[in-house]
Length: 277
Image 1 (cartoon, rainbow, N blue to C red):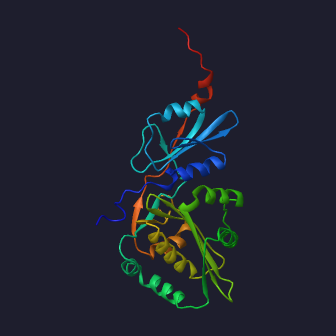
Image 2 (cartoon, rainbow, N blue to C red):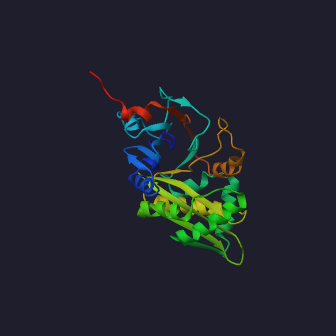
Image 3 (spheres, helix red, strand yellow):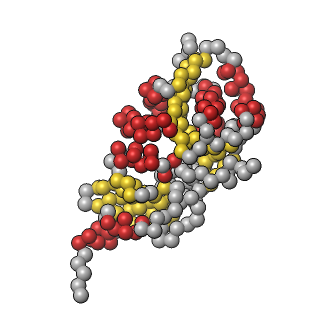
Protein backbone atom coordinates (compact mmCIF):
# COMPACT_ATOMS: atom_id res chain seq x y z
CA UNK A 1 0.00 0.00 0.00
CA UNK A 2 1.27 3.46 -0.89
CA UNK A 3 2.42 5.41 2.17
CA UNK A 4 0.52 8.43 3.51
CA UNK A 5 3.37 10.73 2.49
CA UNK A 6 3.29 9.44 -1.09
CA UNK A 7 -0.48 9.65 -1.57
CA UNK A 8 -1.38 12.62 -3.74
CA UNK A 9 -3.18 15.16 -1.56
CA UNK A 10 -4.85 18.27 -2.94
CA UNK A 11 -4.57 20.99 -0.36
CA UNK A 12 -7.78 22.22 1.27
CA UNK A 13 -6.95 25.76 0.11
CA UNK A 14 -7.61 24.58 -3.46
CA UNK A 15 -11.19 23.54 -2.69
CA UNK A 16 -14.33 25.32 -3.85
CA UNK A 17 -15.36 25.63 -0.21
CA UNK A 18 -12.19 27.48 0.71
CA UNK A 19 -12.61 29.80 -2.28
CA UNK A 20 -16.11 30.69 -1.03
CA UNK A 21 -14.66 31.40 2.40
CA UNK A 22 -11.98 33.69 0.96
CA UNK A 23 -14.62 35.64 -0.96
CA UNK A 24 -16.67 36.03 2.22
CA UNK A 25 -13.73 37.64 4.02
CA UNK A 26 -12.90 40.08 1.26
CA UNK A 27 -10.57 38.33 -1.21
CA UNK A 28 -11.17 38.11 -4.95
CA UNK A 29 -10.75 34.59 -6.30
CA UNK A 30 -9.34 34.03 -9.79
CA UNK A 31 -8.87 30.30 -10.23
CA UNK A 32 -6.24 29.32 -7.69
CA UNK A 33 -5.11 32.91 -7.08
CA UNK A 34 -6.43 34.96 -4.16
CA UNK A 35 -6.26 38.73 -4.67
CA UNK A 36 -6.77 41.41 -2.00
CA UNK A 37 -7.31 45.01 -3.06
CA UNK A 38 -5.41 47.65 -1.10
CA UNK A 39 -6.54 51.01 -2.45
CA UNK A 40 -5.28 51.45 -6.03
CA UNK A 41 -3.10 48.30 -5.91
CA UNK A 42 -3.44 44.69 -4.76
CA UNK A 43 -1.56 41.83 -3.17
CA UNK A 44 -2.02 38.16 -4.02
CA UNK A 45 -1.23 34.67 -2.80
CA UNK A 46 -1.04 31.30 -4.52
CA UNK A 47 -0.90 28.33 -2.17
CA UNK A 48 -0.01 24.66 -2.54
CA UNK A 49 -0.60 24.31 -6.25
CA UNK A 50 1.13 24.85 -9.59
CA UNK A 51 1.25 28.28 -11.18
CA UNK A 52 -1.59 28.65 -13.71
CA UNK A 53 -0.55 29.52 -17.26
CA UNK A 54 -2.19 32.95 -17.11
CA UNK A 55 -0.89 33.92 -13.66
CA UNK A 56 1.13 36.90 -14.94
CA UNK A 57 -1.82 38.43 -16.78
CA UNK A 58 -4.02 37.96 -13.71
CA UNK A 59 -1.48 39.81 -11.56
CA UNK A 60 -1.20 42.63 -14.11
CA UNK A 61 -4.95 42.97 -14.51
CA UNK A 62 -5.39 43.27 -10.75
CA UNK A 63 -2.40 45.61 -10.33
CA UNK A 64 -0.71 43.22 -7.91
CA UNK A 65 2.49 44.65 -6.47
CA UNK A 66 3.32 41.66 -4.25
CA UNK A 67 2.51 37.98 -4.80
CA UNK A 68 3.39 35.26 -2.32
CA UNK A 69 3.63 31.75 -3.76
CA UNK A 70 3.86 28.55 -1.71
CA UNK A 71 4.42 25.68 -4.18
CA UNK A 72 4.08 21.98 -3.58
CA UNK A 73 7.68 21.46 -4.66
CA UNK A 74 10.54 23.09 -6.50
CA UNK A 75 11.71 26.70 -6.65
CA UNK A 76 9.75 28.87 -9.08
CA UNK A 77 11.64 31.16 -11.44
CA UNK A 78 10.94 34.86 -11.13
CA UNK A 79 10.22 34.57 -7.41
CA UNK A 80 12.61 35.15 -4.51
CA UNK A 81 12.49 32.91 -1.44
CA UNK A 82 11.60 34.77 1.73
CA UNK A 83 11.48 34.12 5.47
CA UNK A 84 7.80 34.85 5.87
CA UNK A 85 5.81 31.68 5.07
CA UNK A 86 2.04 31.97 5.34
CA UNK A 87 1.52 28.21 5.70
CA UNK A 88 3.40 25.58 7.65
CA UNK A 89 6.42 24.40 5.67
CA UNK A 90 6.33 20.89 7.13
CA UNK A 91 3.37 18.73 8.05
CA UNK A 92 2.56 15.26 9.36
CA UNK A 93 0.16 12.82 7.72
CA UNK A 94 -1.51 9.73 9.14
CA UNK A 95 -2.81 6.89 6.98
CA UNK A 96 -6.48 6.27 7.83
CA UNK A 97 -6.87 3.31 5.46
CA UNK A 98 -5.90 0.54 7.95
CA UNK A 99 -8.49 -0.56 10.51
CA UNK A 100 -8.91 1.37 13.77
CA UNK A 101 -6.88 -1.10 15.82
CA UNK A 102 -3.93 -0.88 13.42
CA UNK A 103 -4.08 2.92 13.41
CA UNK A 104 -4.19 3.05 17.21
CA UNK A 105 -1.27 0.64 17.57
CA UNK A 106 0.82 2.86 15.30
CA UNK A 107 0.67 5.65 17.91
CA UNK A 108 3.53 6.02 20.36
CA UNK A 109 3.26 4.38 23.77
CA UNK A 110 2.59 7.56 25.77
CA UNK A 111 -0.10 8.62 23.31
CA UNK A 112 -1.90 5.27 23.58
CA UNK A 113 -1.69 5.45 27.37
CA UNK A 114 -3.30 8.92 27.50
CA UNK A 115 -6.12 7.88 25.20
CA UNK A 116 -6.88 4.66 27.12
CA UNK A 117 -6.89 6.54 30.42
CA UNK A 118 -9.29 9.19 29.15
CA UNK A 119 -11.57 6.64 27.47
CA UNK A 120 -11.96 4.82 30.78
CA UNK A 121 -12.72 8.09 32.57
CA UNK A 122 -16.50 8.25 32.92
CA UNK A 123 -16.45 12.02 33.55
CA UNK A 124 -15.33 12.77 29.98
CA UNK A 125 -18.28 13.88 27.82
CA UNK A 126 -18.08 14.05 24.02
CA UNK A 127 -20.05 16.65 22.05
CA UNK A 128 -20.37 16.71 18.26
CA UNK A 129 -21.28 19.60 16.02
CA UNK A 130 -21.22 22.38 18.64
CA UNK A 131 -19.13 24.91 16.70
CA UNK A 132 -20.10 27.70 19.09
CA UNK A 133 -18.82 25.74 22.08
CA UNK A 134 -15.56 25.05 20.29
CA UNK A 135 -15.04 28.74 19.59
CA UNK A 136 -15.40 29.49 23.32
CA UNK A 137 -12.78 26.84 24.11
CA UNK A 138 -10.53 28.13 21.35
CA UNK A 139 -10.70 31.69 22.67
CA UNK A 140 -9.69 30.54 26.16
CA UNK A 141 -6.89 28.45 24.69
CA UNK A 142 -5.60 31.44 22.72
CA UNK A 143 -5.79 33.72 25.76
CA UNK A 144 -3.89 31.15 27.84
CA UNK A 145 -1.11 30.90 25.23
CA UNK A 146 -1.19 34.58 24.24
CA UNK A 147 -2.05 33.73 20.63
CA UNK A 148 -4.18 35.48 18.00
CA UNK A 149 -7.19 33.74 16.46
CA UNK A 150 -9.64 34.92 13.78
CA UNK A 151 -12.70 36.83 14.91
CA UNK A 152 -15.99 35.02 15.35
CA UNK A 153 -17.44 36.44 12.13
CA UNK A 154 -14.52 35.11 10.08
CA UNK A 155 -14.69 31.77 11.91
CA UNK A 156 -18.40 31.42 11.14
CA UNK A 157 -17.72 32.26 7.49
CA UNK A 158 -15.34 29.31 7.28
CA UNK A 159 -17.80 26.90 8.89
CA UNK A 160 -20.66 28.07 6.69
CA UNK A 161 -18.55 27.83 3.53
CA UNK A 162 -17.56 24.22 4.21
CA UNK A 163 -20.97 23.05 5.42
CA UNK A 164 -21.06 19.26 5.54
CA UNK A 165 -17.38 19.09 4.60
CA UNK A 166 -16.33 20.06 8.10
CA UNK A 167 -17.11 18.76 11.56
CA UNK A 168 -16.38 19.65 15.15
CA UNK A 169 -15.70 17.64 18.32
CA UNK A 170 -15.49 18.98 21.86
CA UNK A 171 -14.68 17.11 25.08
CA UNK A 172 -15.70 18.16 28.56
CA UNK A 173 -14.46 16.62 31.80
CA UNK A 174 -17.53 16.98 34.01
CA UNK A 175 -16.70 18.41 37.41
CA UNK A 176 -13.44 19.85 36.09
CA UNK A 177 -12.50 22.98 34.15
CA UNK A 178 -10.82 21.04 31.36
CA UNK A 179 -12.34 21.33 27.89
CA UNK A 180 -10.81 20.69 24.49
CA UNK A 181 -11.93 20.48 20.89
CA UNK A 182 -11.07 20.62 17.21
CA UNK A 183 -12.53 21.64 13.86
CA UNK A 184 -11.73 19.36 10.93
CA UNK A 185 -12.02 20.39 7.28
CA UNK A 186 -12.38 17.70 4.61
CA UNK A 187 -11.35 17.83 0.97
CA UNK A 188 -10.98 14.95 -1.47
CA UNK A 189 -10.77 12.23 1.19
CA UNK A 190 -8.24 14.10 3.32
CA UNK A 191 -9.09 15.38 6.81
CA UNK A 192 -7.27 18.57 7.81
CA UNK A 193 -6.78 19.24 11.54
CA UNK A 194 -7.54 22.91 11.00
CA UNK A 195 -8.36 24.49 14.37
CA UNK A 196 -7.78 23.05 17.86
CA UNK A 197 -7.71 24.30 21.41
CA UNK A 198 -7.82 23.35 25.09
CA UNK A 199 -9.05 25.58 27.91
CA UNK A 200 -6.37 24.24 30.29
CA UNK A 201 -3.20 22.26 29.89
CA UNK A 202 -4.30 18.63 29.91
CA UNK A 203 -4.24 15.34 27.99
CA UNK A 204 -7.73 15.87 26.55
CA UNK A 205 -6.40 16.85 23.07
CA UNK A 206 -5.10 13.26 22.64
CA UNK A 207 -8.61 11.91 22.88
CA UNK A 208 -9.99 14.71 20.71
CA UNK A 209 -7.59 13.79 17.90
CA UNK A 210 -8.29 10.07 18.15
CA UNK A 211 -12.07 10.52 18.10
CA UNK A 212 -11.77 13.00 15.24
CA UNK A 213 -9.63 10.54 13.27
CA UNK A 214 -12.27 7.85 13.72
CA UNK A 215 -15.00 10.26 12.65
CA UNK A 216 -13.00 11.29 9.57
CA UNK A 217 -12.49 7.64 8.67
CA UNK A 218 -16.25 7.00 8.95
CA UNK A 219 -16.82 9.91 6.59
CA UNK A 220 -14.59 8.32 3.95
CA UNK A 221 -11.30 10.11 4.54
CA UNK A 222 -8.13 8.18 3.68
CA UNK A 223 -5.51 10.61 5.00
CA UNK A 224 -5.23 12.77 8.13
CA UNK A 225 -3.17 15.95 7.74
CA UNK A 226 -2.02 17.68 10.95
CA UNK A 227 -1.68 21.05 9.16
CA UNK A 228 1.83 21.87 10.32
CA UNK A 229 4.68 20.93 12.63
CA UNK A 230 7.96 22.57 13.65
CA UNK A 231 10.47 23.11 10.83
CA UNK A 232 14.09 23.94 11.68
CA UNK A 233 14.48 25.72 8.33
CA UNK A 234 12.11 28.44 9.58
CA UNK A 235 12.29 27.91 13.36
CA UNK A 236 9.47 28.99 15.63
CA UNK A 237 10.03 27.93 19.23
CA UNK A 238 6.33 28.18 19.97
CA UNK A 239 5.71 25.25 17.60
CA UNK A 240 7.89 22.75 19.46
CA UNK A 241 5.29 21.77 22.06
CA UNK A 242 2.36 20.99 19.81
CA UNK A 243 4.70 19.39 17.26
CA UNK A 244 5.82 16.91 19.94
CA UNK A 245 2.14 16.24 20.62
CA UNK A 246 1.36 15.63 16.94
CA UNK A 247 4.39 13.38 16.43
CA UNK A 248 3.16 11.12 19.23
CA UNK A 249 0.53 9.89 16.74
CA UNK A 250 3.23 8.58 14.40
CA UNK A 251 2.65 9.22 10.72
CA UNK A 252 4.98 10.48 8.02
CA UNK A 253 6.43 13.94 7.57
CA UNK A 254 5.97 15.94 4.39
CA UNK A 255 8.15 18.96 3.58
CA UNK A 256 7.37 21.90 1.34
CA UNK A 257 9.92 24.28 -0.23
CA UNK A 258 8.65 27.33 1.65
CA UNK A 259 7.39 30.68 0.49
CA UNK A 260 8.49 32.77 -2.48
CA UNK A 261 7.66 36.39 -3.21
CA UNK A 262 7.49 38.41 -6.42
CA UNK A 263 7.35 42.20 -6.32
CA UNK A 264 6.29 44.12 -9.39
CA UNK A 265 5.88 47.89 -9.31
CA UNK A 266 5.30 47.75 -13.09
CA UNK A 267 1.79 46.44 -12.35
CA UNK A 268 0.94 49.79 -10.78
CA UNK A 269 1.27 51.64 -14.07
CA UNK A 270 0.39 48.77 -16.45
CA UNK A 271 -3.36 49.58 -16.75
CA UNK A 272 -2.51 53.14 -17.80
CA UNK A 273 0.21 52.25 -20.30
CA UNK A 274 -0.50 53.60 -23.76
CA UNK A 275 0.66 51.83 -26.87
CA UNK A 276 2.08 53.92 -29.72
CA UNK A 277 2.43 52.70 -33.30
